[in-house]
Length: 294
Image 1 (tube, rainbow, N blue to C red):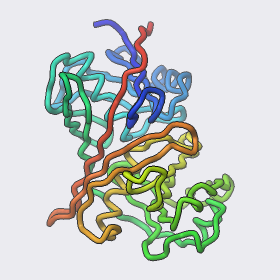
Image 2 (cartoon, rainbow, N blue to C red):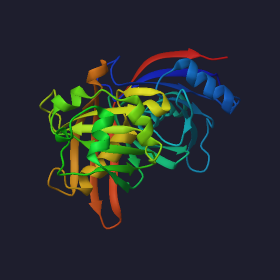
Image 3 (tube, one colour):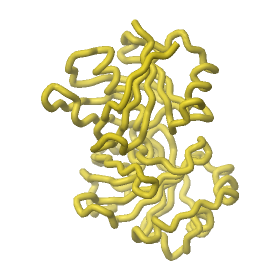
């Protein structure tokens, strides 16, 4: 099997939008240091490496790296890698692709149009809810007023495999004004499980969308992420847990990345049941380029 890599845009309705991802196939001969060096060289928010071109233990072995470190789970790398697995390795329509990640097995279902993948959906782990944080400290980190925070809902650490601090804001004006205070940010995350922040509000640029989101991950070398499936999975669980829309289920559209020129669209579905909250995050993947690595 040839050593190819692919560049894709994930959560993108059009090419050169969404979140960029590099996927390396047949990476069985790369060691951890080489993978980390390649991820740093590419310098996308994440780069993935398929280390088993054949299924093992019910799925394909995949490792995810940021420019700084390996991580157990991330959303857009999961969808983007599933797309490349179907297109380049499986090479026939399949309803589901399973990725074996550091956090466990993540299934991705694929809907097709004219024989090509159109919408991909990942089932994330059941959300876990951790510590709630005071508005004053978060306002200092985001350089906002405490009054910009929607106090009807908590600021909380939530995880579906990778934890995020979820911050509800009142309007898009406050969201646009965020200017991360790096010193306060690193002081805050020294004492939290979550190292990244998702802030959201119910005002949007496009009326067909339901929420506008911004995500900040300086800890892993990403000052602002254009589209974050793992963070939005945490958000989906949060929205259902606290009945943000007045119900114990959601089926919504989320826009992200507008402030950094990478407009993105994520679809969130979640429902509360007797065993917890089921979370599905969906989006499109667009192929941008293909190359060969040596």
